Image (cartoon, rainbow, N blue to C red; front, side):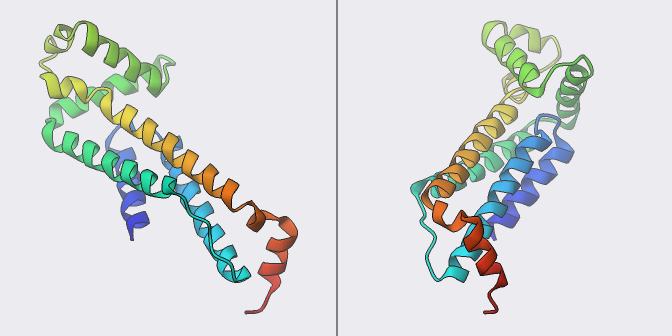
Length: 171
């Protein structure tokens, strides 16, 4: 159930927020598909999947990211949210990555926050110009690390010959 909540939230964020990039959400979905496949292979082979604390840390980061992004959606006005989305659209139209736009906004926020006040942005609006991107970036990184950790601790399930035998098995 938490996978459905996480994936549907992140997919919704892609539609509502230019800061949340498709590649981030795809990596999260691919990791979940990988772990689901590993669980199926473990069940078919009669073994258990070796889990680590990284899975719980990943879930904490994902739920935290959803919380932070939702709070910012609620707290930032639609007008300001549209202005933030336009910043990212304009940056991408000028060949900048989402990371570059977020970094520029973070730098302005830290060095000269008065530049945001010229656009009628308060402190929270200003933070919302970079915070969702960085929260998602860190969450994606932790999610990928968690997936790699599962692969390393369950490498014996990924033997191609074993996989073929398990797929062909009737029960």
